[in-house]
Image (spheres, rainbow, N blue to C red):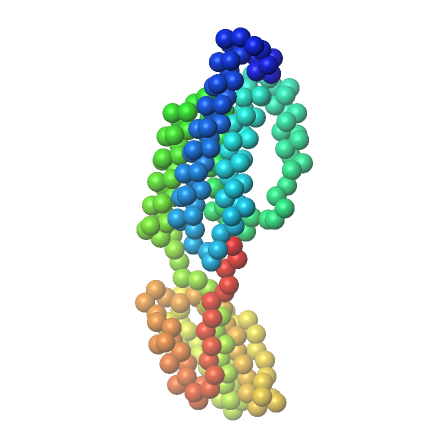
Length: 223
């Protein structure tokens, strides 16, 4: 801190290096947030979250300037940061990765390793984009299948053969009566096979349940 407040060549050099680190952190964090917007797969991302990544990178770059070489100040600042909590919980694991991404870039810029920060931004952004582009690791979402059957057709294993041939897994979650007890409604959680078409599955079940109501819905994702 003494060097930052010193008027002279050494102090001015430190101030300009710190300013350069903040500019670099700002520019690189804007790239990070742009990649985040491109690769976001939810319904709507939070603008405040995007702004937070940018501001966090800039602030961390300054923090690294302050704590560099001073262990006592470092422990004090991190103790203060431990009291700070996000007002809303992060619901998407990928958002946590972007927060850490912004933090790392800010820290690297704060240590005046600008070339390393640029390399990190380019490489990590490329990895994020390729994972998004090729939909790496995607599986079939869990679906909720509700089937209504007449009471006279009701028995436990009525749809087992259909579900075995069309799904990778299924589990019966609920059995309830409906229509004044004249009908039974089954609720299953299922994971369809890759080749299974929703319409084909529904058609097979309708053949078995006397063409009564069948519904298939996807579990809602929270972002």
